[in-house]
Image 1 (cartoon, rainbow, N blue to C red):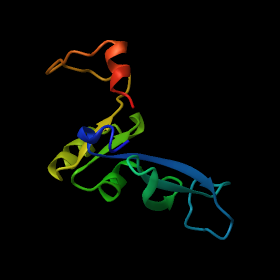
Image 2 (cartoon, helix red, strand yellow):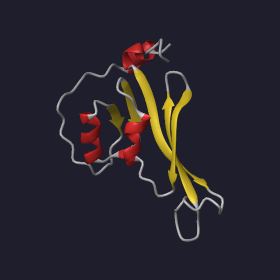
Image 3 (spheres, helix red, strand yellow):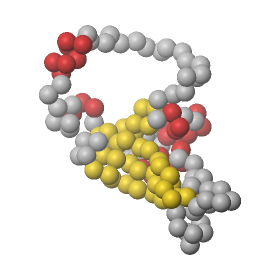
Amino acid sequence: MPHAHARLGQLVAIDGTLIDAVCSMTWADYSSTTKKAKIHLGFDINRGIPEKVHLTDGKGDEGPLVSRLLAPGQTGIMDRNYQCYRHFDLWQEQDLKFVCRIKAGTIKACLETYPVPGRAAWCSMMP
C-alpha cells in the first residue's frame, strides 16, 4: 500500500468497539445490568498494524479520542459515528487531516469538483 499509493500519505483507520467486561471492572459503565468497555483503535493502514489503542468505559464518546489516535502528517479515516462539527473544527485547529463519512441527512455544499477516472483508468492505477 505505501509504495503503490505514496501520494495518499500515512493513513490511519480510526474506530471504536464495545467489549464485554467482567463484573470486577466497575469502571466499565454501560448500563445498570451490563458492564462493557470500549476500545478505540488507530490502525496504521500503510503498515497493516494497530498503532494506538485507548480503553474507556462503554459509554465513552469516540470523537475526543481522535486527537490521541492521530498525529500531524497522518490522515484519519472514520465512519459517520465520528461526525461532529465541533470536533471537525478542533481537529483542523490541531492540524489533523481526516476523511469522515457523513450522515445521510447532512446538508452539503459542493466547494470544488474533480474528474473521476473511468473504471479502466482506476484499475490501471492498482498494483
